[in-house]
Length: 114
Image 1 (cartoon, rainbow, N blue to C red):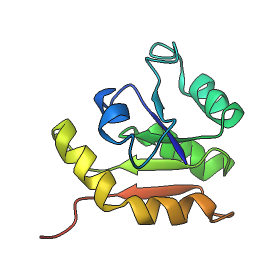
Image 2: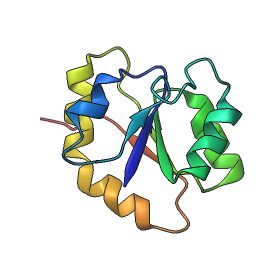
Image 3: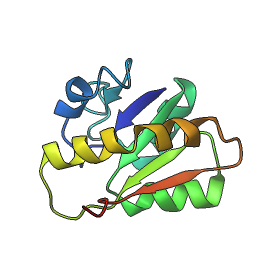
Image 4: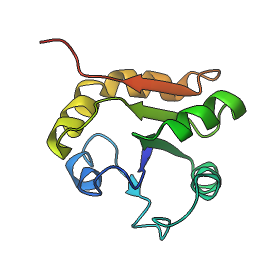
């Protein structure tokens, strides 16, 4: 399963999570850092990526259009890249299950209670 990180999330996550999600990328690495949501959406479809974003716009697109692509909506507010990485790591099994569920279009990731 490949993740495509949106511009509002650090590109460092590609390397930080490469052991769990090999082949992942960031919109800036794909020349899409200035692209609109529709262009990123189409890119993700064409290359079998799941979009990871803190942006509600992709959540709305997923709700309106359905998959593909699937969207992981990171709901952590202001936080560090490390916190995002830890949240994705702790939710890796959930993300994997979400990826194979045909009807699901978006997944909300939040901090887990300690």
